[in-house]
Image (tube, protein in one colour):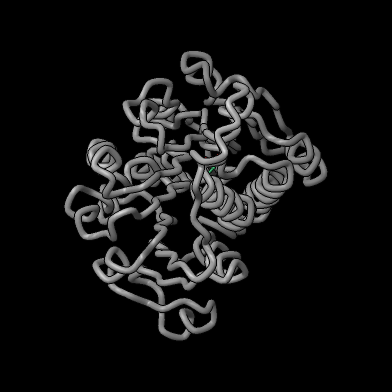
Length: 312
Ligand code: MLT
């Protein structure tokens, strides 16, 4: 019987799926944070189900002598050393669809919060200030949303934004003209997006081609007063450049769910009044966590029992 370790907090429904598929499972949700213990036990398992706390470094992978599959309940596999896993013949899977709606909804929530300065207005009201004249917002209707990345999450954001009567332009080298038509967006170059967007939202993985895609040079090409939302990955925006652009007013506001260093417990951007921050909550809904847990358990079981690969 294959044996799987769940080393991060995952819905218990995943455990049941493993059992139903005849897979022995150890549910140790705090183990991922304990590097030494993980190193000690990882050699016992054929499969591993993780979220983001477990770091599958080269060292841990080297100790994983029986491991055949790592399943990430979520989209990003940043916490897995893919070349090291590949070298050992370990399949790495993710669940690219399970939390897309939830993450897209967070991006829309962040955009609306930025447009109406909701966190600041909330804090001011609770402080008894009743600053009705201070919080003058902007409408999103008829504004242009610049989508950087029009994949699973980006295309859902585009759909919701169109429901809000926004015009959506998208920069994505993989977006075909047919797909652009299907999702109702105008495919543009990055420079065109920067020049036209009132709001910019990022939905790409962090790879060499996207690292600091929003840097000082890009920010200089935006409309003055642009608002930027990032619910994807921290390294997509040069945080120092964003700080300067927020200070100068080139950027009117930024809503950030992700940071270069996470957990982000201290960051110069926290000082800026026109910044809204959340602690990487993009995928944090009950529905999404249930989806990704079920999917990852099904995928790992199918691989261990039948060699089926649905998302590697
Ligand atoms: C993901 O990669 O699925 C999201 O960023 C959410 C997460 O890391 O929990």
